[in-house]
Amino acid sequence: MDLPCPWYSLLIPLFVFIFLIIHHCFYTTSNTQNILLPPSPSKLPIIGNLHQLGSHPHRSLHKLSKKYGPVMLLHLGSKPVIVASSVDAARDIMKTHDLVWATRPKSSIVDRLFYGSKDVGFCPFSEYWRQVRSIVVLHLLNNKRVQSFRYVREEEAANMIGKIRQGCDSSSSVINLGDHLCSLTNNIISRVALGRIYNERESGIDAKTILAEFLQLLGTFNVGDYIPWLEWVNKINGLNTKVEKIAKKLDTFLESMIEEHIIRNKEKEYSAAEAKDFVDVLLEIQNGKETGFPLQRDSLKAILLDSFAAGTDSIYTALDWTMAELLRQPRAMKTLQNEVRGLTQGKSEVTEDDLKNMEYLRAVINESLRLHPPNSLLVPRESMEDVKLLGYYHIPVRTQAIINVWAIGREPLLWENPEEFRPERLLNSDIDVKGLNFELIPFGAGRRGCPGSSFGNAVIELALARLVHKFNFALPKEEYLDMTECTGITTRRKSPLLVVATPCSS
Image 1 (tube, helix red, strand yellow):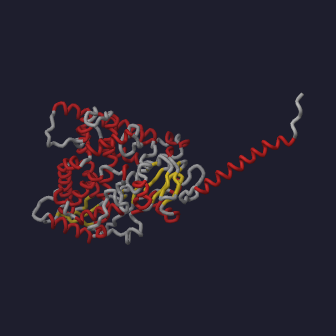
Image 2 (cartoon, helix red, strand yellow):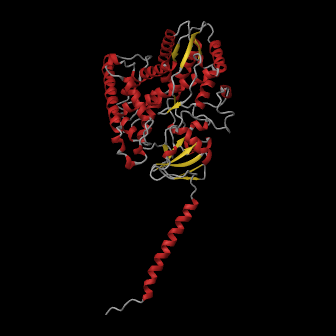
Image 3 (cartoon, helix red, strand yellow):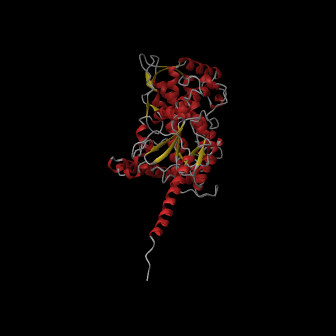
């Protein structure tokens, strides 16, 4: 016969349960109190801080950083994001803890356009990324290869000068200089990457329009990446359809171009001195005999697209901003012209051999990149493990990091009168754009820094030197130079660069 349990025996498990609850709450609270997160603006349900990005995120984030500090934590939808607006924070992310922040967050648009993110710029950190980056650095963008394309840069720069000369006359006609700069960069990248300029009349493919739409999509905000359950919105607003359409057009173009190279290479043997374009190089190493790493067709196409995503827009944008600043500062323009013309007296053309002595030219370009980095916010990184930022902020795994290089370039503690265009501040300075000086990092730094920065600089230096060597530039009468920015993958000027170009008599 079972005896009834005493009433007090029921209290024992109840007390144990209460004790465990109190202990858990106390332990969790203590741990939370010991974790220091970066300061954060208040957020809204579902969207978090997305509403605070505005139409120009680099400016909005700069404004927020003045209130919350150079390191702040935002929640963009469901994604935690660190925004770094100081040299120390940028150095900690891209140097001290570079390996922790070496991967990229997933992007559905990038995944579709880059064949599952098989490129170098957007590929997640992995052994595959190590291999393809090694291919790009050692085989496509090494110093010898960059120099081998010198004739392409000089030919296209000469073509640009010729077209500008045709567009102006002794009466000082107004020309759209931005169009000439855009054609220059498109032509150089096309010849270097693909071997030639793809004219729609000859090939039947409008490569220029396809690549322009491709670049536009890369700068498009995708709500599904930050609020996954709203991904269906992209079906309604047509974004998914547009991405699919451009992806198919890109693939058709790239396939035809690769097949064209395969057929041509069967019929032709290159001499040792002849420069091969990127397609030729990638086809040579596709079987892995040179690298020990077989390169699949999709990977080859993704790497080629990188050259357009990272090269075309960035180079054009840098040149456009630099010429705009020089037009606003006639004194700086005159100083640059005196240097270029003085060092090339008696020569009909500026060559790349002349550039190494042009210190003011480099100061002008670096100062322009300080004020107007083509990518005001570097491509986001993502932490692969918990990490301490600046030694005290706790950053959980899978937190994105955005470096606001635009804000760093305008930090008054680093730069005197930061809003002014003053190339003299960087004349004979140890600060450059190679990724070692975190005061000036327009191309990023560390493992995920842009591997094509030296090639880009070579184009910018030559084009700028040729322009100021051959022409005197001025704004049209009563013309206001609008420096308003427009949004996209790069921070471009919104208005066309209309100028009066007068051929120099020398």
